[in-house]
Length: 409
Image (cartoon, rainbow, N blue to C red; front, side, top):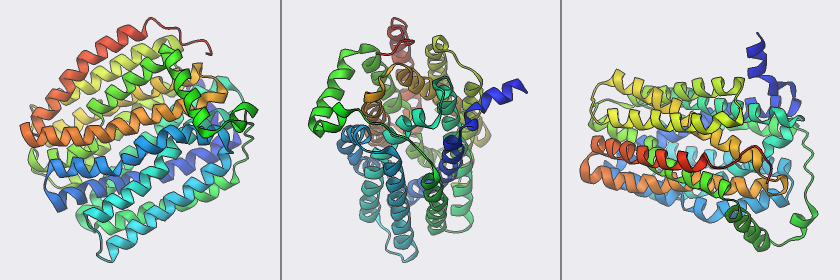
């Protein structure tokens, strides 16, 4: 009983109780939309290279907008920004729904709406991550809030693809986009009900955007414990997190299966991630985080390598469970390490760089991985990515062990 209370202790705060369900509902819709877009692009093009190309062009805003997003978050009221972002998410979901049900959906439209979506997402990621410190009154519960947030995302990663795969197989893709739009609507009202006190530093408020951006870069470079952690994240995401783009190809070409099987495979990833995030939410000390990161990286590397040698549906589902487990065991501690040491007045900017390392490198990876899969085949691509990342994991884990992540900097 005590462990269950410890696992959900952040729920004693009103803002977090409003924030969590709104995020959970919204993320389920987003994952339904993600699997629908992946399947739709591959169905139209039948080309791994074109899939990677579309994903790359869609994500260009992440490279351009994300560095400035942290400045915006640190300068302006986070509650108002959260509300505005939800409205824009709803608009994008409505537009792609209308284009699909009217029959006007095509690759150029997908790219344009993807660019619009990622402009919003570039602001949303650092905004959401830097808002956690305002959702809990006691900073000791911050790590629990971050872990529960990860469990929210991972629950969506489990439920969303499974629902999306079934909807694609037995209805049509337009329904997926409509459900995403409907999932966002409650989020708007729940965010509106939150009461967030966001006190801004006068120095940050009065400085120009470019001065704040320069300070962000200088601060990160001056602290190798931050820059090395973010470089580790970037390499991890580049090597291993293009799987939503690769899995439709793997399901079709290796397993010779349909969208419902793809939904189960991606759903298994979500189950693994959810399992890891709930375990991490109970209690995790700072000195264990780097070990958990390394073990998580080994888990997903191993899953990738074995995927290259099997062509059985249930084995792929089990392997992707361990991939999801490893993914969360890496990403959540990495986020916690940074949140633990970064100064409050620079939190938004540091987390925006973290978001760039995450989203930007995944987008670039989708393009590169698609090109590799076109050349050597999807199975060999998984083996290559898993093997190379194993070497990087050993290197970065050794380097991170030299730093103290228990003190504010």
